[in-house]
Image 1 (cartoon, rainbow, N blue to C red):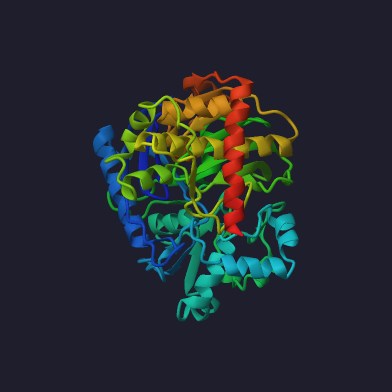
Image 2 (image 1 turned 90 degrees about the horizontal axis):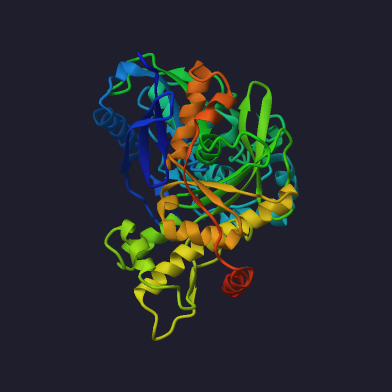
Length: 497
């Protein structure tokens, strides 16, 4: 029997299940979307039962597509949207205490501002590598414990459990294992990034009882085994768990210091491997754990653009410019350029390197000539401009030029946007032959732990690309394009004050 890997990628808008073999051949993949809930302006929530249903359905359907037996699965890898914050009742049903608060949610902006004024940001950055922003789990968890009736009392009794999505899924898949790993824990604002342990001072600051927290484990362990999971036999080991962006870095085989990737999904996330020593950013990027094998931790610098693929969804759902997101590239390609239109897609604030939670979207350069095709093109270009800012800042922090960037995610299939991205950066983009590298990375870790691959070098040899985009834009043209973006960004900053 050839060993097969099942990877579960629980993302912001849907769940993907992927089955692949030891040669990285994808035998089947399926994605099921679930509802987004917006109870108030700037609030974003997920129903954990809807997420669980999407996982069960995706896993069941991927076996139909792959046409393999469930008993062929040697191991399971789980990756996830990271900072999304969950509370659930302990017990076999794992009943949610409240909807999960999604990473995009901005409800704790005032709390973050209060903590900044009290002088806590410098300490938090030193301990966690993060900035004080509603993006991260710490203030979300504090809000839940304070505002959900009875939550703090239940927490102090140890009757409820906290976790990011991977912890919740592990709990349900295994029938009660409550664990996490450093890549996700490093995004909670509750973990000391240097020793990969929950920090008592941070727990006190955010008023979080330690008994609700999952155990932090290294990435190369068996986290648990399937138990009463619909459609799967009991006893399949879960030997890979990792946050989605770190998983994409692993799935892109960025194992050596200085290698970089960018994932284009709901948001865009650029990450560079900085090796065994955490590099603290001077340009408002994030220091994060990439993965930890045994007692050896690999770190990275990350920059996040909150709205990228979500901007394309907005063109579809909010403006009705297209019927399907897949139509945007054709519409944008129907014009030679954006005709001066610039779109800053700050539809949920702005992440690195600006960190403007109150920023709103802005479209400039409109004229009587402007058509929906120009707006579509400006949307794709707006994504690329944001990513350029991330990678430029990243190179400054790292202290070395980035010579190449590997790309993945659904947005990487957009040839127009990828070519424009390479043009703005001035160096090549290499697209993975598997766009779902977030799922792939978790699966690779699962297989590596199980011994399907002997080492990272063996995985590196099996990794392959699909396409390389070479820059075609002149330096003068690039400078003009960046100048247009900078003017639009200055306007966004003024309006956000």
